[in-house]
Image (cartoon, helix red, strand yellow):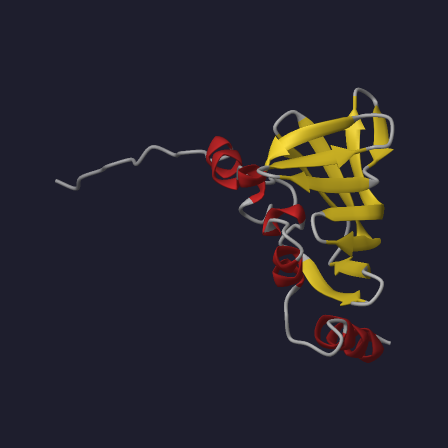
Length: 160
């Protein structure tokens, strides 16, 4: 059983790209989106270049915060991508107050990205997504790691 899982993961990570060797991040850039729309945990993807339909596969569910928003990515994200627009998006949600709402569309307008949940949207500078976020800590992993560090004072002793 374990052997079959390894074979499946190898197929997903190498063959999921289809006929090319581009990464999912490079495909985002081709459509005028920053790489930071996807976390670092991407295993592979499929895309139909004629329709724009795509699926992106992550290692696992991925959560992190951007500014005051909590985001959650499911292991499979689907949608339709065209130049400057991702629609019919499924698999990414944002926490608003106490509710998790699905982000259904992402649109680039100049130097701004508009993330829409259907009834409302939020604008972010494209530069906010210049780096790929890390699951658990997003774009601020150094601060999150530094806040969790504990220092033990060195005890010096001398033998006389």
